[in-house]
Length: 450
Image 1 (tube, rainbow, N blue to C red):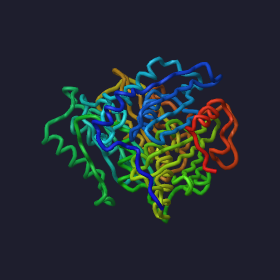
Image 2 (cartoon, rainbow, N blue to C red):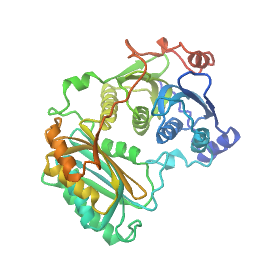
Image 3 (tube, helix red, strand yellow):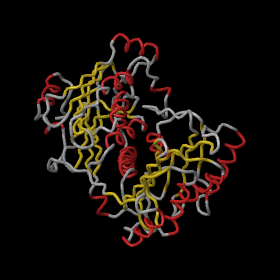
């Protein structure tokens, strides 16, 4: 099969010149739609533009209800229908400025940022990256080691999937409150954490990395779990059949147009679009056209992609790898278990104490988000029992009493949607209903595969 030439300019300086001559235009329209704010992005095309825009929207906690993507040729034009997390129109006035900055000539080149798009500054912290085999009590052991080493955890995010764990933890020196840059001390932290990660069963694949600098933690978590091959399907895969039936990913050929068509259908949740676009980008695929519908309890996404070399997917093995990697990317951020929210005064060793109590009561942490705002700790944990089953209510109450009933609360994690669930096979050919869709189609910015 013939490969289509990539539209990515080979010379970075020429690309920057093109962007200066054609600066990105972002318009925010809150009047055309009754239910959402329309964000229209019009820019010279460069690799990674889509991920940069989606990252800005994600970092601003905006929910993408619909999206229409077109970046074929030298131009990039997308339309996003967004709301806030309460389902209301977006009122943030700096959306356009932040998107323009992410796409403008001052933004760092995508190819020089293998692991950071929408970078979060972390110079005042030391970032620790951990990957290894998950097991009950692992998080408690990690935080206990850090507390013993006089390290204060100011932020962290932990994902588990397919018996693997990945975490990005931001620490400071307990006494100075600053990042840790002493080489000997960093080496000791790394050595002891690696010992914990390896345990008795993960002698080869456990890994730690320590850096003083900046990273985008959610993209790094995807990259770390991808590198750890959490997408591999094992005979002993723990996920039930009923869970699999809720997620459908197909990869088909669009031979006459020279694309591979990826269709995805699953229950909707926040940051789903970021997870799928991030995965395709890091797997070295370019999205040329796409449509996203997420107005009901179910999300449908369709992408027309090629590899960065301009070729569509050409083998069954590659097709299966894309399917498994997208399935893994969606499940990594799943919210299995009971959601516990801890809010209270921050102190040294708080996480070590809390996760120790979890472990002593037979709770296993499937996902965690740790943040510190001023003097307040605001942490979220998703917990099950050690077998992956729902925790008994009396166990949860015992844990709450030990930690503090006013500090640790059980929270519902239901994302309400207003529209009914879509049905039938998802395709561009069925989606030209609204004014935005007809507008893009008439301009030739959305193409049908029929």
